[in-house]
Structures are given as C-alpha cells and as structure tokens.
Length: 245
Image 1 (tube, rainbow, N blue to C red):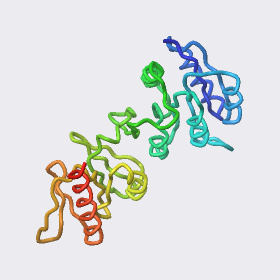
Image 2 (image 1 turned 90 degrees about the vertical axis):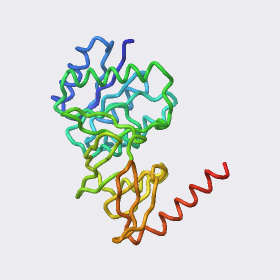
Image 3 (image 1 turned 90 degrees about the horizontal axis):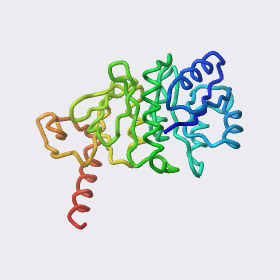
Image 4 (image 1 turned 135 degrees about the vertical axis):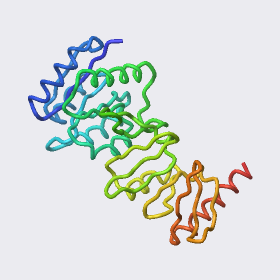
C-alpha cells in the first residue's frame, strides 16, 4: 500500500531531512510538512493522512500533547515519534504509538517504521490505545516495541528500570515508582522498593530466614515488610476470583 504521511518538526533542517527520507521510500505517496503542532492540526483538518511522524519536544503544544489529540480522532493516524530523547518512552507506550525512532534518523530505521505503519493501516485502527500496549526499548542500537504483556517483573536501577521478560531484560529511562502507578491496572504490584511484579505470574510466596520472597519464573525476589500484607491480600483475592469464576 502507498501512504500519505505528515512530518512534524520545529527545526527546519530536521524537518527537511525527515521529509527527504520519507519521500525516498517507495511506500510513501506524499509527505505533508508542519513546523509545529498548530500547523499540523491545520493540515489534518483538511487532509487525511495515514501516519504522523512527530517530534516530541516542540515549543507551544508539544508532540505528546498533539499525540493525545490525535488519538481522539474518529479515524486516528498512526503515530511515530521521532526524537533525540528517550525520556518519552513511557508516555509513548501510554499513547499506543506505532513506533519510537531516535535521531539521527537512518533510512533503514525509518523503513522499519513505515513497514509497521503499513501493517497497522491494513486493519481498522482503534481510537483508543491498543489492547496490547508496548513500550520502546533499545536493542542492539535499534528501538523496538516491547509488549507490556511480555514483562514478568521490573527491577529499579537508580532513575532507570530494568524490564525482565522470559528470555531477556531491557533498561528503560523511567522510575519504578512511575511504572508502579501506571501499570497498577494491568496487574503489576509493588513488592519492594526495588521490585515490581506481574501478580498473575507469582507462583509462590514463602517465608525465609531473612523475610518473605516470591517466585516468578523460577526467580526469587524479596518482599519488603511494608508490602507483605498488601501482597498477601492481593494473592488471596486473585485466588478467590479464580475459584468462583
């Protein structure tokens, strides 16, 4: 399929480079340009586009705020963040973006984003974030979208958090406290100042000589005293729910 896209960046050289790379891809039929979010909304008022390639940090209405507006459209375009920063990764996950591309942009990386956009446009796009949200992570120099459902537990590492999956781990620039708040409705529970776990994956809560531990995927994680009571209550409620379904 051919795509009509909108490139948005407040820095003219960056906008020129992004538009050039998009135009050079055979999947792109036309590239509209906007130097800020207000101009982007004017373009979108008169033109239907398949995807918006969007800088995050812009004066006035920034990229995150514009993305939130776009998600409320009756037929929202796919959103690809194009940014020099990685501190918007969790917000991008919350918005259900299609991709998160780091500057400087490489043609092959942009091509991967266009492939994802084309795939997303082949089926109806929901107006709300997808049922399977994902968070951008760095893997071998490339940003990939990691489904939240694949995260088993999370470990605090200073101002960062390490997401543990069944076969790998990924460091993201977000605090454990932020993830604990945003992922609470998805079944993640704080068990320690340094650990957050997916409750449904807890297979054991056991008392040891140094305190309680939980088992997740065969890994034992400590449970702090302040979180023990809440964790027990949550496990009991979850078990009762399963029994009575």
